[in-house]
Image 1 (cartoon, rainbow, N blue to C red):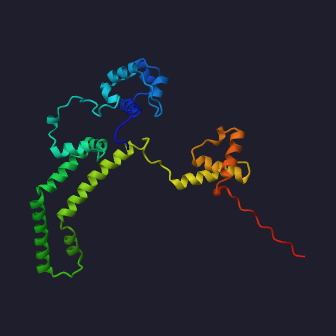
Image 2 (cartoon, rainbow, N blue to C red; image 1 turned 60 degrees about the vertical axis):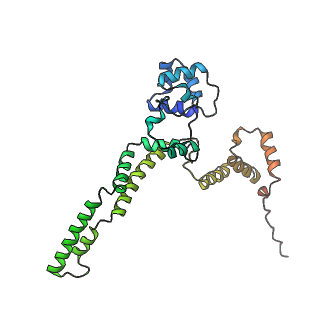
Image 3 (cartoon, rainbow, N blue to C red; image 1 turned 30 degrees about the vertical axis):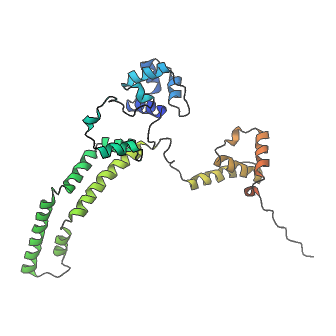
Amino acid sequence: MNVTLTIQEKLKDLRTERGLTLEQLEQQTGISKSALGNYESEDFKDISHTSIVTLAKFYGVSTDYLLGLTETKNHPNAELNDLHLSDEMITLLKSGKINTRLLCEMAAHRDFLKLLSDIEIYVDGIASMQVKNLNALVDMARVEIMEKYHPAENDPNIRLLNAAHIEEDTYFCQMVHKDIDSIIRDIRQAHKGDINSAPDFSAVDEIKRSIEEAARFQGSDKEKRVVILCRQLGIDYHKLTPVEFQTMIKILEKSKHMVIPRKKHRKKRH
């Protein structure tokens, strides 16, 4: 995921957060659907000043946020003192060493307060006494059973009591692990379609598709290899003119990867 959002990503996020289509946004802002679509396109840069102001007012954000001058959407003038951050935290946030956007998304997640509560309970030892009391009760029950019934070492009841013994470190580590897993899974899902996110298919899948496409191509072995290389280079060979295609063959013939082994003919026995 990106450390900071582009103007295009911010505009798309703001629209989708409100569940608006481009047609609905056109009706409510007076900006044409085609222009709005272009503004959200990753390679489009020329967004008019008037549109920036109109969209900022419509979404209730600052123009600085849309222009990338700040990542604060709703509180552009928040006082630093109100955040109660330590000097160390401020230095870390300003250092550029961490993904502050990811950190903010984690903190804003619905389960983040639960994560902090579980960590606080463990760090402050709030549950330590309760855990010790529970373990003491289990130990007392085990001693009583042992003295009264003299069960075998592998008796199911004794094994059950042993399993009921709580290890505080293990218990809270599992709780915290579960909390943070839920948070990062949701964030990952939310960013599945981001520009910098890894595609759903692997490199092996891409090579397989290239070979399958080349196999369907009606042409010589050299032409099929050009098709594979074009796909790997991100070139749509359908858009190449016959002259361009032949030129590519001539260029790629200089590559060792274009060498096509000749079939050896066996000599006829007389």
